[in-house]
Image 1 (cartoon, rainbow, N blue to C red):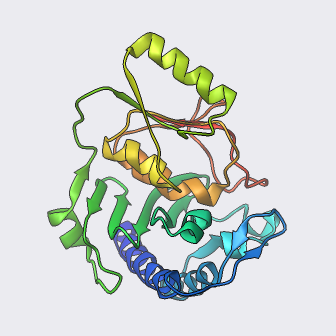
Image 2 (image 1 turned 90 degrees about the vertical axis):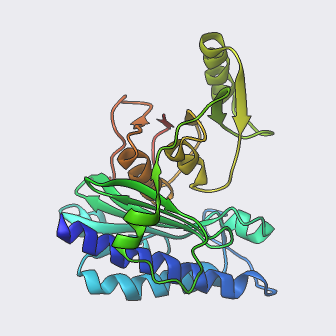
Image 3 (image 1 turned 60 degrees about the vertical axis):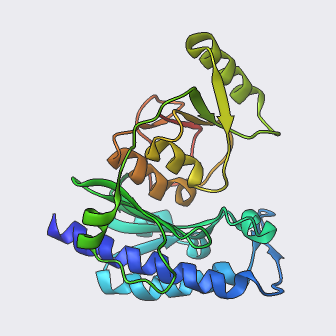
Length: 265
């Protein structure tokens, strides 16, 4: 338990300092490259990656990062504990400068996401999942902040918070897949009044973890590093992240790092 707390505390500082690297680029005239899968890449992704790798080195754990993902399955298949990192989740949101992008760091035990950190640099939100203790949110966390575990537990908002009002589904307001539309129609039949809300990056999962939304159906491609940290935050808040194909909890460190469709609720 103490080991988990020490590891997560290191991950908090890595996420915040990774966020600081991103903010150094955010208001500049940065260039955008296109990766082989046609997803965008900026110097902010790279700088955050290197800073996070540097700080997580102290934990002695391996790191599987989106910006260093050329790791062969044979090399990682038997890892017991490791970090799964997306140094800038929501690069498209970053390019739009709408503030809805995150730094994601998840602690993986074999094939399960058990703890994690999500930092939202522009909004200054910090979400943390600590195994056996739960999930917390701190507001107004500056990119120069030093957050320790005691402060987080004593001052942080324990997730989830109670919610009133209509049943809330997380989804795209304008580009919803037919499968998602069908899911929402089924929810309407069961719940009646349904509200649709949306947010960028892993913040969609955080909406459910926080209690601001009831369900997030994701019937579109994602990669493991997109979801792992949010998964831990949802799980430690008492929520479920289920693989839509198996009906069981989502698994990580697969040979193919592409996620199946999933539902958070």
